[in-house]
Length: 464
Image 1 (cartoon, rainbow, N blue to C red):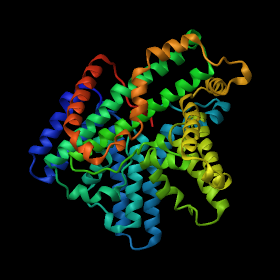
Image 2: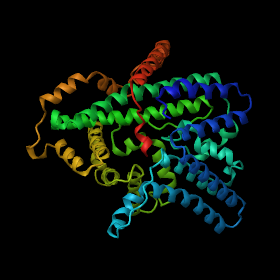
Image 3: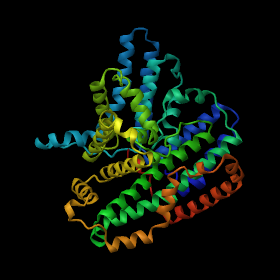
Image 4: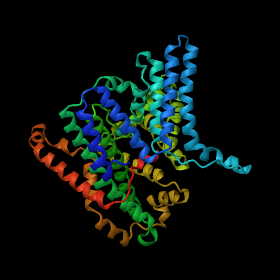
């Protein structure tokens, strides 16, 4: 089930929210939310929902045995089991073909094909954070396996994040309130995310796919390649940040307060800053559960570079079992190492506006690497971005027609990717609140009309 579908917007969500608010006891609210979450995931994954439940109960059992063990050796054993089993499932489903198929093909052996379930990386990481958090702080142990299952399967952020660490919401599972103010604030955030997805991301995505699928018609040019990269950067930003807004809004409605996942990443004046603003929950996970345990920046420059290599290799692989994702991760590893250790002094004297433009340009190249899973197409587009030795024209008249035809919404999208409201004083923002509410109502109605006319359009990060 997709947030931006009629069955969700007009049936599933109203029923679940209504039942939650009429329930007086928190135990009833948790039960309703748990059942709704199971139905939500089973709607798209009728078989893998059993794996989700089974892995959660296995990790709960390991955490229980770890909680009751006094010796460190036993605690480490149960923690290892709680981490390795979910990771083994993830590795087989998502990476076995990529890592093992080339070797097995030599011997004429083929792996059984298993379709990757929605959001497996997200819920696997959440299961792991619970086990690690309990190991680090025994007070976080959850005696109820059903409450742990609620944490793992909670449908607002189940299939595309944000990644929620157990320690951040453990208190709210047992002690939270649902209020009218939270409902209003949550609905506003949800509608904002819905508009991002339906009105901006989908439109930008349609242009990108149409032009790339018809290269023979529109031609390939330097300007056209950069234009497509800009459109894709807007598509993936509004698609993923839109989902995060919807998840955060839904969580607020149900009494959960999820951390922000995006903070206007395209205003960044450096690659490190970009990754502090983009997919914040993933960066937090790798920092707290990989980078810091490896030693972080506490063991010298060479060890820090090695730790960064591990983190960015895993970040690339996390996004998919394909060579382009590995290259994408290594690309950012190189950029961050250069930024921190080679050009740090130079960057201090470069004007902020120029650093912002350069950062966005490097990010656009990264998105080209991220987009193309076909190595030949990736090489072709990277060559086109930089002129390919003069063999690629600067622009084509056919593509210029596309730019003129699809200019309105991409311009709106570009403006929306920046914190325009910060240009207005707080007093003026308060005076404009009634207009903002009317605007959100219009966004919701327009989004519904767009959803009616569209086919199934899942979020990009569903596949991760």
